[in-house]
Structures are given as structure tokens and as C-alpha cells.
Amino acid sequence: MTISAVLLAGGESRRMRRDKAVLQFRGRPLWQLQLELLRKIEPQEIFVSARTDPPWRPVDVEFVRDAPPSRGPLSGITAALTQTKSDHLLVLAIDTPFMTLEYLRQLLDNLKVGYGIVPMIDNCAEPLAAVYPRNAAVDFGQALSGKNFSLQPLVASLIAANKVWPVPVSNEEKPLFRNLNEPDDLGLSDRS
Image (cartoon, rainbow, N blue to C red; front, side, top):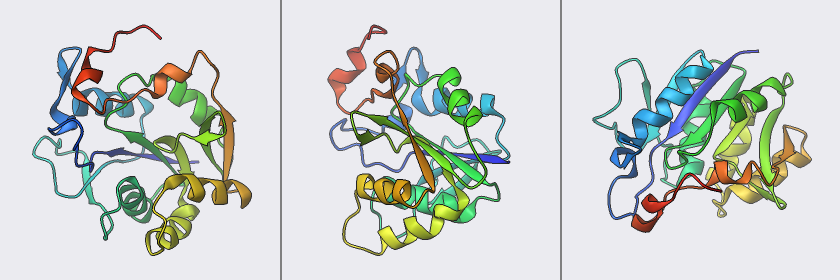
């Protein structure tokens, strides 16, 4: 099985009031932290998905324009799934700096041919730190052309179709999914 990875960086950052990708976290910009994490996975290819090509994108990372119409993460994942040459696509949001290499490797270690993996916290999917099979591109495209752009019903339908497996997130793992949405979130400590 082959793996590609996409860093989702297309959000408008309305609540943060500035581009999250360039926010400093632990002394480095978020984009740099997250790309470094993805590089350690050693994917076949790495994409950055956004509405416009970010000026910080390294030359060895491919830009994928969010699939129109712009519908948040749904657009970014759809675009990356249609571009990937790999069997699976690892998705990571730019604003989840607490995610670890160990957790992502654990997800990848449990992959099966033709199936993805989506972490679940209390029956709610965590679709922005998940792995999707390339054949889910059709499902994402259909959702993008529909009226409901939430990833929750899409993931539920992928689970029902046996395209992704839900994986429960333990209480110890829940802090890995914290994201930075507002300026006050930058004051988060390393504590759970």
C-alpha cells in the first residue's frame, strides 16, 4: 500500500483573525511543524491544499487548489483525493499542532487495502486527522456537489459503505485533536 499526505491549509481563519498557517507555536510557524510531522511519515507525495498557493509552501510540496465551490475541508480533501497517486491519503489540518508522529503511525499501521481509518471521539468523527482510501474520491465529490458540506454525515456514509473503519480515541489520546481556532487558544499548555 502507498500513502500520500495532505496538509489542509485553506481555512479562512475568521475566529483567529489571521492566517493560522503562519502562527508561531512553540517558536515555529504551524505550517512548518505540520509539514515536518508529515515528512516523518515518508509519504509518496505531500500536498498542501488551500484556496490559493501559499507563499510559505516548500518547492517539494505540491499545491492542490481546493475543489470548487469552496466548502472548507471538504473541498481540500476532495481535491487531494483526486490528485493522489497513492492508495491512501493521510489528512492533517494545519491547526492541530498537538498531533504526534506516534499516533499517525498507529493509524497507518492499522490500514487495510481499500479501507481508510477515521478516529472517533464519543461517536463524533475526527475527519481532519484521518486516512482515506483513494476510492473515496467519488464519495467526496458527490458530497461537494450536494447541499450538506459537513464531513460528519460523509464519514458516516463511508463507514456504512465499509470504505473507512472507525477507531475509538482513548481519553489519553483526546488532547492530540485539540485545534487552534481563536487567539486565546495560543495560550494552551502542553497539559491535557
